Amino acid sequence: MTEQYAIQWVPIDSLDLDITNPRIRKWIEMHGPTPTAEHLYLALGAGGGDPESGATTTFSSLKQSIQTNGGIINPIIVNKLPSGKLLVVEGNTRVAIYRNFREDKVAGNWDTIPAIVHNDLKSFAIDKIRLQAHMVGPRPWDPYSKAKYLQHLRDVELIPLGEIIDYCGGKKKEVTDYIDAYIEMEKHYRDVVPDDGAFDTNRFSAFVELQKPGIKEAIVATGFTLQDFSRWVHERKIDPLNTVRALPRILKNEAAKQKFLKEGAREAIRMLDVPTTVSLETVTTDQLLRVLIERINIIPYSEFKRLRGDPGSATAQIFLEAEEAIVDLCKEIGSEEPA
Image (tube, rainbow, N blue to C red; front, side, top):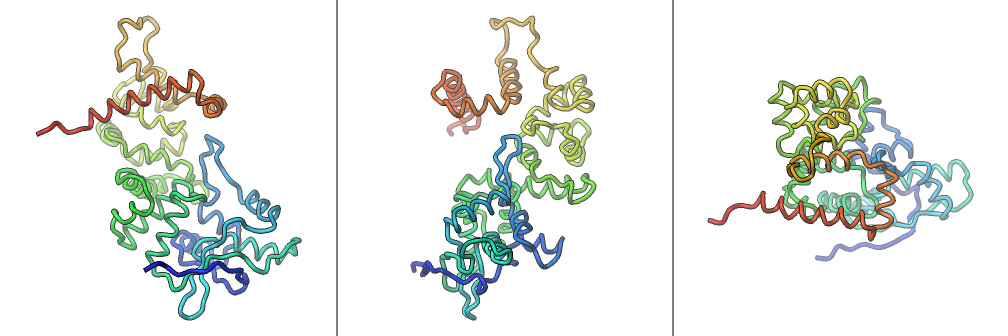
């Protein structure tokens, strides 16, 4: 049966914010029952991004955008319960901003807000809306918040993984890697930071990289633990975060390992570079790939922006050719032999 809904202008006083949202509820448990608009924004991870790439959105810019446009562009999503109660499914922060504007007497009409109103949505229907809006939709959550919500759906609401993947897209390994990375970050990284204020969710991608084959094994085989790994992440020994991929090589090389423990992964990787005396005629594929990985890891953001702005350039094209060749080879390596 097709879901029935209507687009309406809804009085903001008639709306209840959804404090049962697992990510808002977690914030309330930590900080109290009356979150402000900015608190909701932070709790929902709506301003998340990658600080290394500059891809962030601030709460101030969201407020300014709404004020400049005289309202929101995308309607919020509301669930009308049998009791008549109107519960905000998607758009809690925007409703709170409207209320804040009205309270501060900001010029404009902040009494009503455009909303898609559904009738008595069930629990998983609400989860589907969130998945589509924030996993693959126009307002993506930051990676840590995505992983937190995926873990909640799988392990708390006990929704089958296949159904979660169907609604949020992606591949099974990508989703399970995110969930496992979230669990390990919460278990190990939270223990090594001094307080919640130092818990940096932007370090999450290091724990996603940790899920790649061979990395955990290399850490354990050389006498370290995931608690040590979390400490390295916290102390910025692993920076940029994709240098996690180099840990197996670093930890197996005694000199590089000592360099890493003192100065970090970037300096340790330099010790594993191809010697300058090696000619291209005699250099191995392994050595060439290691140099390529190091060079990619230290490409400045300005160069990345230049390449993105000119994808037809010779440099950008050779990167794309290299990607195609490596991806094809990796598929062959990972494929099963025919019976």
